[in-house]
Length: 428
RNA sequence: GCGGGCGUAGCCAAGUGGUUAAGGCAGUGGAUUGUGGUUCCACCAUUCGGGGGUUCAAGUCCCCUCGUUCGCCCCA
Image 1: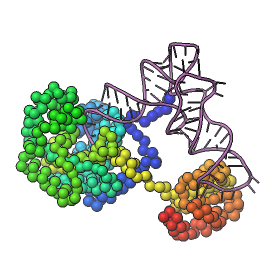
Image 2 (image 1 turned 120 degrees about the horizontal axis):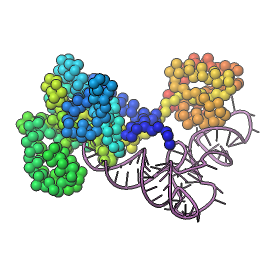
Image 3 (image 1 turned 30 degrees about the vertical axis):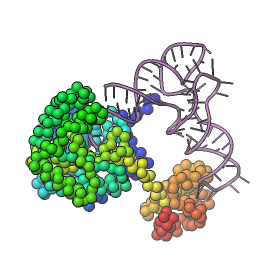
Image 4 (image 1 turned 60 degrees about the vertical axis):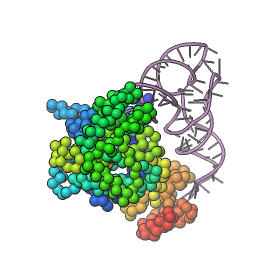
């Protein structure tokens, strides 16, 4: 039609939905504040190299989903819109020497992420995450704390029917041993696997475990478990994390086939899923990444974190709650040149006194303006016609009771406290 | 990249080859002078995402194209 549309996989967040976003942000902020996590804001684009090295060349995210382009530098510089939050935070941690500041850095962030994928339910090209990263502790309590914060946020928003899947992917050595065992097991079945899995057999066999192909799943069911290949330290760490979660009263299920898509994970890996989300069931995913900081050129620093997908969270919230109702105090109705001018001033002054006030600009019949006042959800209506304008007065009408009184404009502005009390009462 | 669904007004939506394209919401004007969450009336798509074709006749059938949506892959 010639109308310019938002690009595929991007969405406008319209005013009627924004209350969900504000609600999520305020709940998360509060919970993170209580745990003394500090907010960090990093650029939404970074050197492409950061993600290649951090996330791993072999991953799908890096291999086919990055928004990468050259900027105008000479020579051209390859730049990528961040596909996830951890790499940027770790880069800042290293570059700004945050490790030197204190033992442990507890950080959180929120903002847009970008992946060039085909959009579907719960998946966009620009989407938003809220995430945490704890840098500088290998203690299982850090894993448990971070998981507890995630469940706390989700529960505080009223979500139920969530599953916490937990696994350990061990350290690189454990994983190498396991990988070999897995390949040994799967190779005889190679012809029966789905084509994607056949491909992965040599490149990324762990990923075969969570294939959705039925036959592949049947085969994977009897595959060796990573949990039988954990070394002593890995096993102790994993046991401890489980114990701590139990102590905290957080329910989880061990899922030895949980494999996460980014290369940097070590030891703890977890996902929080819902059955109400269609194909993209994961609301929160995370884990430990003890090797990443070192891999990106920083001092060896153990770390653990997660990210919540805000759009997916909102999909769940929409099924449960409706957004908070309007909180408009006054709707100002006016007609006639003089009255309209006075109405504007009155609205302005009331706002300065802390009231929320909407002014009807239409100039249409009072009847229509009242109908709009009603729909606006305002507690009271202020009416200014020619009579009121002539006498510098205004009619104050309480919508719920239909009671109406004439009052001098100056007097209305004097009785703030009384008005505030009445509005509170009528709203309750 | 691959597969399926859908595309009629600002929004929701009927319509499945035959004169002027239902209805609802929203919007605008009105039902005696300035009072809403009731009612009633009028107005609001020369046109069915776009292009081509079949036919005496197409929103309705066919082809192409664009958009959108769900799924695969993968992830938040």
